[in-house]
Every structure is written in structure tokens, then in C-alpha cells.
Length: 364
Image (cartoon, rainbow, N blue to C red; front, top):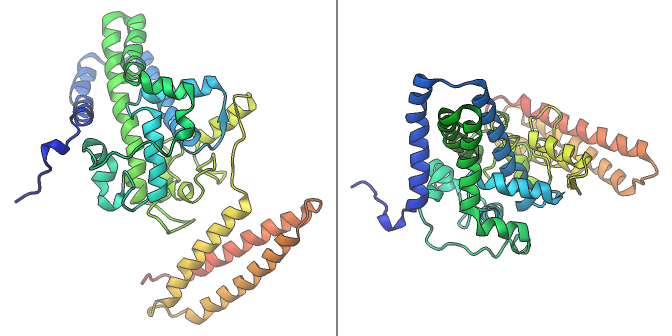
């Protein structure tokens, strides 16, 4: 017999909302666009609402409130709380509590969106069905003391409905009367909620399934430049799980991370401060350590014909790492040229190990 979850386990409020918005997005809205079309104003409004609500999750709910990656003045905090609510992803106390628990128990029991329970569960199932025991909000005492956060929690539904549905409908009405209000509600309201929600959900599902793990294989989190394009830079998830308090996710110059750029820009305007970032040397050491672990696995593979050569390369890298470590211990801030030499040495060692790894074409 097929497995059936008892109806008492279904969270009917969440399930009804997620199902209805998705169904409307893929049925009623295409029908409306086919029959009535859409003008430039509505397209621009959709993009603006996607940016406002998407950044309110990545910059506000995630990096600011969940990880305390930087500090922000009240206008930034207020805007991210208002438009974060407009995503209908819960108030920030519940969101941050779940997310902090996710980092603490990732891939294990206690992880709210544990990928080991399946892709669908991590993506949306954990929201649609009640948990056996709802965990307390005992890991967010800092947020519980914040008056703005408590205000959002108290009026969450009213804020969400107003910012997500009433505001775009009102702006559409100002632009083009009743037809503009309907279009605003459908496109910048319902369709935008569906798009932003599932972009967030894919971080919990796809970015724990597909992608690379250059910094650590201790958990399932993966880096995906493709997903970063749709999530304001959140796709570099392997880095984030290794260095969760960094205000950046994409740390390479070429990586797409609009959230990082927005935080940095706001800091220049005096609206954010105390931006936390991991030193470059620590990042490179993590890459070296992970590359070595992967190389050692290849060396242990009986199919590998280059074992002796690879062991020589690993031994040479160990000697260099020991040398750079000693230099790091003796480095003085008054000798910046030694610091630059240290950075170059670490990067050269990482590149040597990565080249050695590429020698082994066949996986075990």
C-alpha cells in the first residue's frame, strides 16, 4: 500500500497557501497575460518587488538577523522586516531560529530541512507538514530583545498581506485603474511570491544536492554559481556553511553576489557597519585542506597508477605548508612584504595540489 501521511500532520494553512499560489502562477496568470498582456510599468514593478523581497531575505533575514554578519541602522532593518514579511516565509524570529538550527544540526536529526530526508522534504515538505515537536525559539534571544523584530512578529500577517498584495495592487491602480490593480496583484503579488519563495527553497534542496564542495565535505552544502544568479548570491552554499558569519557568500572577484555588494554599498552610506569577513589566508587554507583530503582519497584508490608521484607532491606540499605556518607565526604587521609573500605562498601551494588532483582522471 502507498504511504499516506495522517491528515493531522498536514499544516493546512501553509499547504493551502503554497499550493494555491503555485497553481495560480501556472494557470490563471498565463491565461491573463495571453488575453490582456502586460505593459512596461508592470514588468518594472515585478522586478523591483523581486529585488526588494529577495534582498530582504538574503541581506536581512539571512545575513543580518540569522548570522549577525554586520550591523545595520534602523531604516535597513525596518525595510528588510517589512519586505521580508512580504515573501510569506514567516516572521524573522521563526525564520532565523530554524536557520540557526539548520547550521547546528545540518544533515542530521534536528535540521529543520534535512536533505537526508529527501529533496522534496528539504525543498518544501518540511513547511507543508507539521513536525512532531515544534522547537522553541530559544536560540534567538538577541532577536527576541529587538523591538522592531517583535513588532514584525506581532503584526506579521498584516504586514505581509499589505506589502505583498495590497501595495502592488494599489500601485497598479494608480497606473491604470482597475485593470492595473488586477495585473499588479497577479504579477507583482502572487507570481512574485511564488518565484521568490522557491528561489529560497532551492537553497535548502538543490544547493545541498548539486554543485562543488571546494571548502569542506563535512556536510552536504554545495557551491552553485548557477543558483547564485537567482538567489542574490546565496548559491555559494559550501562556502557559507564553512564560514557562516562572513557577510559574503561569493568571495571570489568573479562570483555573483549582489547581496554582498549591497551590504558593502550601504556601509559606504553609513547604513551598515562592522562587516564580518574571513581572512583570505584562512579561506585558502580551507581550500588546501579539502583538496588534500580529496587527493588522499585518490591515492588510496587501487585504480590509480600515479600513487607514488602524488605522494611526492603531497609530501612537498606538507613541507611548504609547515614553512608558511612558521612564517605566519613570526610575521609582524610592520613587515607587509612578508605578509604578501605568505599569501602568494599559500595560493601557490593550493594550485600545486589542485594540479596534482587533476592528474588523476579516474575516480574510484
